[in-house]
Length: 112
Length: 111
Picture: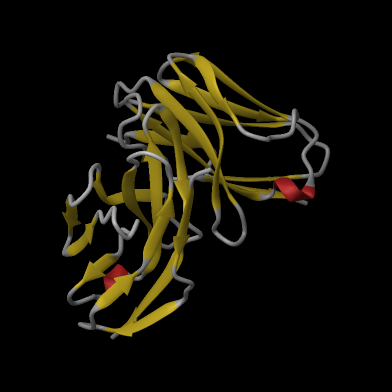
């Protein structure tokens, strides 16, 4: 079946540090890939997505590239801010299968 | 304008009770979902409806019954609540298999 593996957290960084959160997936065919973010006490928000190999999703300074050869979709940001502190979820959906399969989430804390 | 809304935001109840959570979306989407987030933040799909028809029913106890009166609403009724039902429940919607948009969540606490 489909699965998503994210790097274990928590991740603690200082403001302006470089962020990478690793995400790899297992799926047949060509899934769509997503990063969702959950700020404290809130619901999930779509951060970015990519629907085919070599696509790069980007939003709010975050980027992730769909790498089919390594089945990866790592999230990066060049300079994090305190306001980026949240839980980040990698997820996939595949074709006519409506459901999202999520990774376990990675808690990011950014200190001033 | 709230795209996907849920009520209530918090729900505290005793074991054995029956409760409902409501979800509404104003995005014109045809597909709606319920997800459960456990205490470790793990998210798992429970149900999905497309055009009011059940299309996904994961291994969820029969005590959970979704109802979709129309394409804009998907409610979740839970009978005989148990301690293990304590979680955050998220509603989501999408246009077919396109991007899913989530509601703010309902935190259910069973005492």
